[in-house]
Length: 516
Image (cartoon, rainbow, N blue to C red; front, side, top):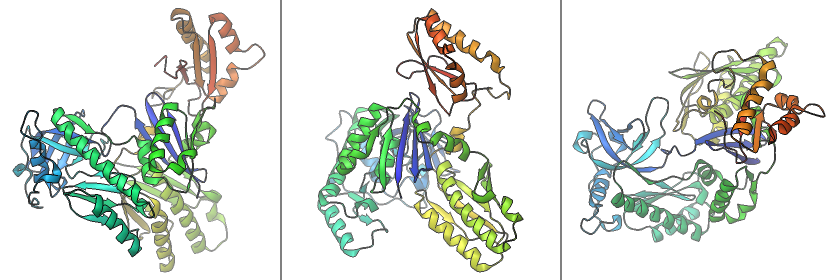
């Protein structure tokens, strides 16, 4: 399998597309400077205790209070509280985790009011980003993820990924971890550590321990609510978790991000540094790699399959519903059971891709075409389980019910991708009507007149659809040339498939928007 990472950077957000054999399988969007990402560690203040929910609301600086259940406190919450309370400016010599005596584990069936009170300062970690009207979900069971290991403070155990099966390799990894880990630190050894050198694993553990010390030092310097330790940006997180021999290239269109990624890969996998490429083309990067077209086609309600079959994907408050239709296949004289199984198998492949692509979470119900033979129903279930194995999100798949329905639960820690893609139409502003196309050139010229004539801007870039670009550049003396002579400014035109048919984006030389 050939994997590529395509990264588009704009002043407002970073969009990361993962492509497998030229087919888009994951799409991630990260808003610039919004914070509150999964893995971030905060110093929060208890805002409200909810005994009925056995939970608390915590202020970490987000517009909505974050939620933390009693079970999210973690077994060693008493030790964490003791350590955080000790980190006081001007207090006695600060306690270190390596030298403290751990407290008894808290009772799993306890009450949150026994451990938290309003106004209390707590160290917490974002477990789930804010979604829709809900604030972030927090945990006090803190862990720090690296390339090869996950560091677990307040533990003395070494856990190894179940995917590492060789006994000799398990013994080697345990030996390395035990030799480096300080007292009161545990570790989870990830699958990526298999075959890694002793020095790489040791460096990973030491780096994560240093990060923990940094977070603890920030407790002494800052007051709640405040950020103690930030997770890597989304691009580096994906690279950290997925980078392997199957990656052929990582292409990014921003030089600063390019340098950051290259520096990070130089640390975790020096032999892979050469696959990082800086894109300098005049065509938008997603258009060049055929990503824009795939996004527009794949996030629709109707998703086409091969040979006339298609999916209908509906999103409701309670669950996601997917209907599988055979389309033109039903008109053929083939055996009905064989046809149904073939269509269902093709649909299962596309559904697994759509779940990753849209990052659909919660309950997913799939209405497959009816299969009457038990062996075929079992084969479909096993195939769905197999192709979902590459999905990094936690999920559970149930066999087909007697009504031919398959139920899937899938964990989601970030907002669903489709909600970011489906915004209010920038062309009609939600009205369902657009201005007469014959007035488009007049509207653009009015904006150019203001920017070039009144504000004196000497370089303007118009980002428009390919159809509008062709119209503006048509003829020997095009509209673009006439505007340049008239307003004595340089005008560049960029074709962008993601722009609406009559939408116009006006940018300066550095890519910043000049108009709303």
